[in-house]
Length: 492
Ligand code: V55
Ligand code: FE
Image 1 (tube, rainbow, N blue to C red):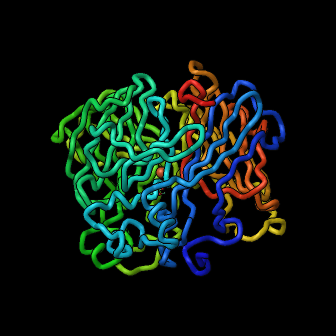
Image 2: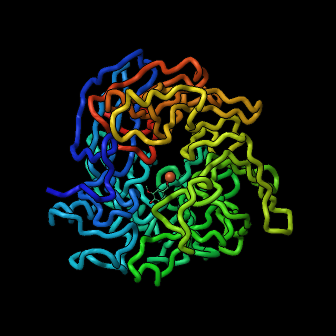
């Protein structure tokens, strides 16, 4: 039996839940809307065998995929490990063979292969549904295709050999008008390489365009944004090098002297069309959305002031600073007609928010009115005395709909012993207006030490949820989730 004590694995509510699960017709409070027919997929990180290093990143834990299949007002739950090559190698060995987050030099000799770092992927970051297929993604490797009903892992996928990067982002963007997917891979040609590969696949998943550009410096490029005319590539602060990796360190360190960068290139452009804009110290992980207005690109993103991740330490040896790991909803304007390489940045709301935000997928790449994300509403009570072990010091008790047009914030409160995970917007029907739909997400119930799925009307968040699906156990923190209607996947 693996020893989880003293490892990077959590305790209490966050203690590893190593089983796979099927719950038919879950207990429901309230009424699941009859028009919901589809599946909510979640991908997250869960240690099968714990890390060998107490200071490793949770981002290095094994991929775990779960789904809520919802139809006829009922919900079934299923959870499975993503059976990566790494998972199967570990299982065969009966122990953790792999070392630090994205550092193959720290791996057990039996599987060590620094020339092929993408084989180490844990595929733990986000589900993707495109062209009738389901995938789990992580930015250090290729997608794993999953069975959308059984969640069985099929095989790694590279668009039939057309995808020419060793890596594939966890955040490709889907164009709601053309059905295209635009995605990228960074460190595209090997460990710490400065090649960034960007490609477009059509609505049937055939690769139509690709380009490779050099990055100004090698950093985490976690997310992107897409407009109907441009591809937007933000990053900043994190650094790595072959020397750092050979010295046995975790993949990333934080270098506060590095500028934040945003690359903008026309969709279908050539390498020389990439324009790099530059800004102050920022930790740039997730985006909400972007659109083009003439020769301006407007990006909405919940970027952090500085390093968000305590396990990627500052390279100058200073301690991680939680006071600067704050994110705000920022509006960034990139003017392609200006000669300078700077951008204009506005903080739209002074309140701190979580950075796992969403928009209505029908407006992706287009002008946006509503941004949805999670935050902690300090005006709501937290009943600490009722919570079991492992509740976080900072709770996340609310979802918000942030109205860019009016500035108004509509708030959903999950409860005094509850902490929410990322929200997902579910459109009501295929047509319809932006914002007409549901906001759904999993919440940790620390009073009863189990998890729930909440479903709220996205236009009536203040009225509370309309249904809650109750699970009889804790499920691990998702990183990202996606809703797929029964029209998008062959669901049984
Ligand atoms: C992120 C998550 C990752 C990762 C790199 O949220 C960045 C950002 C879950 O894995 O490997
Ligand atoms: Fe992400």
